[in-house]
Length: 102
Image (cartoon, rainbow, N blue to C red):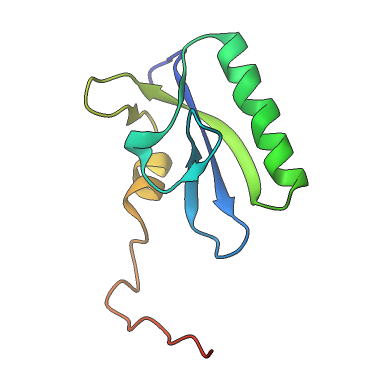
């Protein structure tokens, strides 16, 4: 895997387990394209601190930074794992969505 200094913060949303990314407005978004890309160590440290606050607030679980290749359209994950996480589940996508009782 190639080394990159550009990184994105990811986690799983605590309410439903969905993969989310931290954006520049401190929101957890489902779109990789909307994620805030850390270009420096200071940027990465800021993302880490912001993610720790979200864990304390019980918004997300398991946050971590992962390397990306910068691109004009959307940063590209360097690992296969993050490619898969960005695209969603690889199995069970043909199953019906359970109804929520209200």
